[in-house]
Length: 139
Image 1 (cartoon, rainbow, N blue to C red):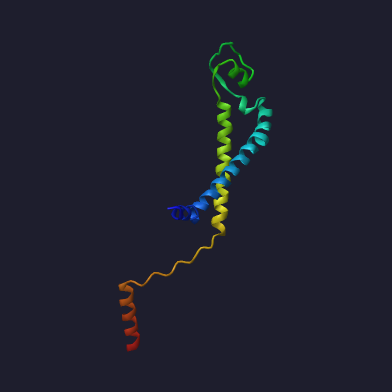
Image 2: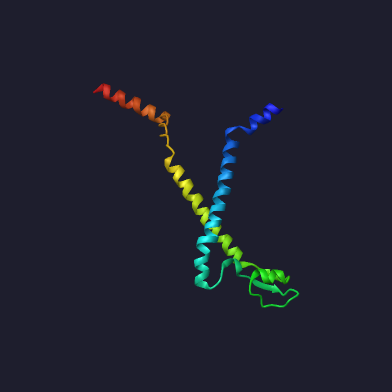
C-alpha cells in the first residue's frame, strides 16, 4: 500500500498541480503586494483616502461615530460594511486573472502544434477516383 501511495504522489499530474498551486499562491501574493503598495496609494492620494479605509457604518458601537478610520470603528465595536477592502480585492482579482490569461496565452503560443493527419478518403471519393482513372485509361 505504501508503494501505491508513493506512486500516486509522484505521478506527473499531481506534481504539476502542486507546482502550479505553489506558483499560483506566490503570484497571488506578489500581485496583492503590487495592488496594496503600488496601485492603491496613488489612487488613494488622488481621492484623499486609502481603499482599505473606505467603509460604511451599519450600526454604531459602544462609542457613537463618526469614526475616522476602520480601526477606530472596529475598536468601538461598530458594525461596518468594508467596501474599500472589497474594491481592493476586486482589483487584485482582475489583475491576477489578466496575468493568468497572459501566462496561458504565452504557453499556448510556444506549444508546438502537430499538424493533423489528412482524413482517409471516403468511399465516394475512392469510387470517383477509380472512375476518373478508368476514363483516363480509355483515352
